[in-house]
Image (cartoon, rainbow, N blue to C red; front, side, top):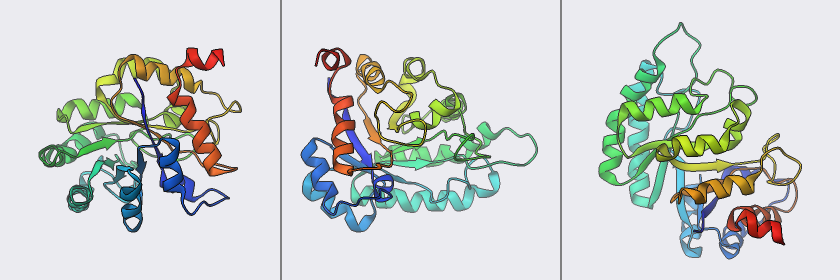
Length: 259
């Protein structure tokens, strides 16, 4: 099976080299989608045949659903973005637990309580919600959902097929590693995948610590139907980086080893 691939607009927008027709060039390579594309660029994506794979359901990941005080405002924000997703043909909205620095609390149940009604609405609209665990060691100190187990517990409590995990392997390699085991153990809960080199959110090359061809093989083993999104910040030519990353997930590991 082939793995559908996309790339994150925000990370390529931070690249030292900018490519005006990056969407067209990505589509030419074989990419089928793009994450987090601003609304004023979406017609360009449609024109070259790229799906809108993920947009933000909430703007700020620090203010999230594990604090009941945020639920009303966040629900309004997610509903507004759900309407945009419906209108623009977006597949998924990304949601977050937010940070927590207060006394011990049942953040999982509180997060599930806030997301459950929104998951029901998203399910009716045939749009996904994806909850992303983030790393607290390097990038997001204080974020409550910082493990796959935490995200999985929320998803299982909500019990809607619309709510699944955005399994960001950059973040989870930093926090817990064990990526292939997690794919196998949590596969039914995974709705979307992000990848980037560790350390440094770099390209998927031999200067970082994850064997991405083995990751691709594990996803193929389970006939993963969703997207793998490249969310690294290219330090050189963005098009060359897109092409190299695409080939990592496009070619089976055995075939690659023979070349």
